[in-house]
Image (cartoon, rainbow, N blue to C red; front, side, top):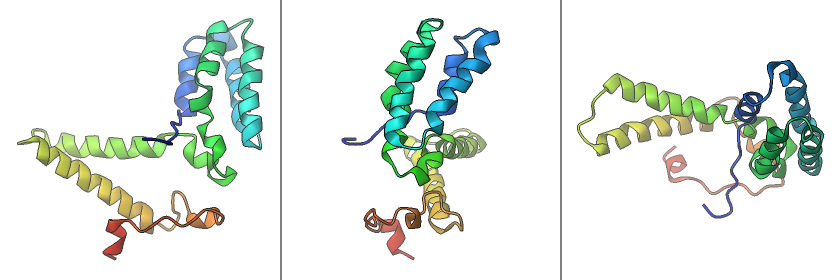
Length: 160
């Protein structure tokens, strides 16, 4: 999709990094990487990736390479308003939806054709969308980004 950013989950990235670090150094490396996400502005987040990579390079060159290679994907959240950072720097909501699709398809077991799988998965995704639209605590509240234009109504929103 043109213009779309890919956000790598920071938790999964940290797990991948820690798998390449001796256990004795794991806490220090994890603390250094967590400083990336503690920065107050997007520019400082990106700068901190470079600083952490430079700091870890002498002792952990593989980790430094991982950080520099994943910098764009790891810091995609920084171009959004800071109020939304905690919501988008992790893929947990997406994983929950995927697990729900998996759970429901496992209940059925065998599907007669591909269209049946698509109908079930589509129904689960529509249900999740509807829940996110009317939830008391919306996942990404439009009120938290008043300077952004309001998105056009989706066809599913018009039926209400």
